[in-house]
Image (tube, rainbow over all chains, first blue to last red; front, side, top):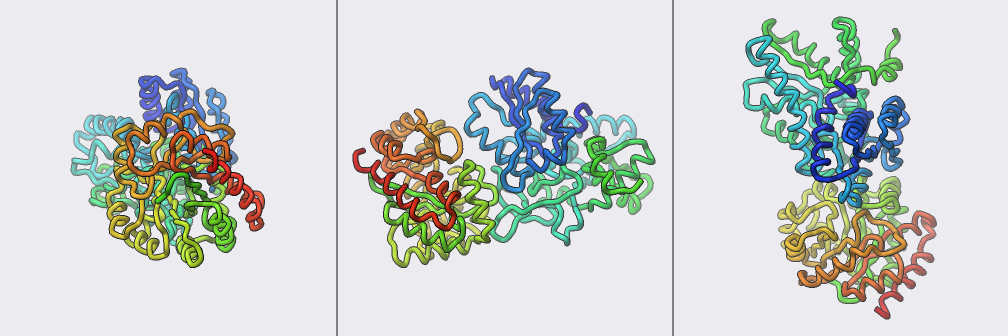
Length: 311
Length: 252
């Protein structure tokens, strides 16, 4: 996982598209910085200029990734407006793009935004599901019973779910439950949001009764987005995928457990999927196969974990 | 909805607070053929820094959608200037499109402009506006194709809003050259009145745009910038600015 997460699957694909369209500049939004880093990598590889919009709050919280992007030759633009986080970075990238589209491609990092972005990103990320299918058939000789992935915008989940949509496989998306849904401090748009329209898509959003988008919280920066990809909204409504939420605390416990039992530091985002898998496994038959999408490495999260646990 | 030559002014409702908005509207009414009133939104993507900050000030002062409609009702008691509500789609969508349009119309709103609603997705909204005799305004930009211009013209019962440039709202020193081609093209295609906005901030801009054949001009950021600087004490300077802009209408 060069770049530390699944994001590179999408950035390489879209950077190729940008080159094909004759664009010489990429812009991107980033929350934690994972997508910004992946875009910077793709830009460096293909000789495209890169400007990354990042909420000023996130720039402060994610110094390492800001530095990584700079090393890779990208320009990081702090966004001072609104809540100074991911959604504001998207707003700012859109503002840039309306005046720069002639030479610039907006490389959106998740299965969100106006059509056809949700399908473009899904298709590039579906390499995850295609590979999972191939490997599980080799190892187990049959499809898994359950696939679990975390959902912020939802790109890693769409990527692994998509090739299994028509199979008899239970699919579960795990959202950031933050400090608990009942506290209001979470980022579980599908579990606790309402239908709305933002960033060119009809989907589920965390919003007040006037349709104002509200602040979100998750210990995992990559889940900290008030909306979710529209295809997830659809999969929820037709009942094909179950969406659940896991709290910061549960995710942290899963983070430590995987680190200590298998020697793998998972990203805090992916630790949400893992936490749900650990609980679910207790209820299932012993011979059930569960696949967890470990979509990112946890190195980036050590600062956050350090503040939360005493070791 | 507008006749040539028209000056259209914009402010965000609730900036800096809802009672000052009523005072500002009364000033704008003296000079404006139509007033666009913005419903504040948490994520005003189509707006540049000046109007974006104005949305956030309005929300911070606690402005609700119902306050916006209330201020329209109060304004309309003494004034006849048409009011077009300018909004992002989400606040309208969550209230229920049909219900919102009905209540807005009965509050005295004459027309609506939804910045992030493309005409291709607007059937439910158009239907609600048609049933409630609410005028509609859609946006076209310099890269809008002739075919879409035709659709936009057809869907716009109020007027067609031409975006003068590639970009967001905001004060600009000079007009973009794109605007003149756009006006020419739109004039040959559209049957509805044409008004031009985004980056229009001086009497000289107003004059040039009207001379190029547009029916109206929209000025927003140049006015909102005063509110940013003067807050509740904005009325005098807004009066001055509007009087100056109005001069652009005389010798077009």
